[in-house]
Amino acid sequence: MIKVLFFAQVREVIGVDQIELEYQHAMTTNSLRTFLAAQGDKWQQALGSDNLLVAVNQTLSQWQVELEDGDEVAFFPPVTGG
Image 1 (spheres, helix red, strand yellow):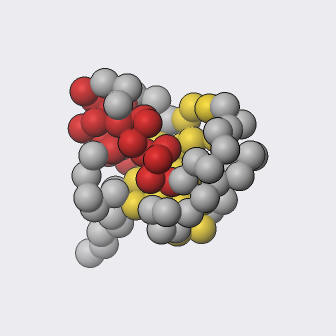
Image 2 (spheres, rainbow, N blue to C red):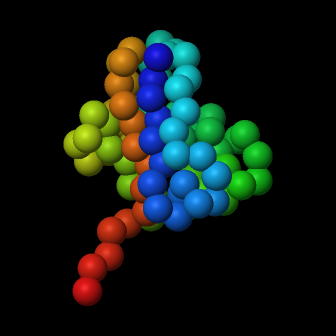
Image 3 (cartoon, rainbow, N blue to C red):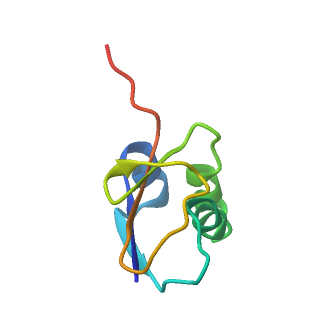
């Protein structure tokens, strides 16, 4: 299983804070995002941004990281500060 977490505006648009998906061989952070974005308009809106960030097992990651069974993936918008 892959645990997927959504934060900030991503969570607000989708309306859920986490889901679990069956692990698929050769799944990457980008293929996971593509799969989720295809689930409907609100998913596309939340996950379609080029500015979206991804973390795997609580470490900021790149979009072509290959996932392993049991990983935790988090999607979130860029962090801004003031």
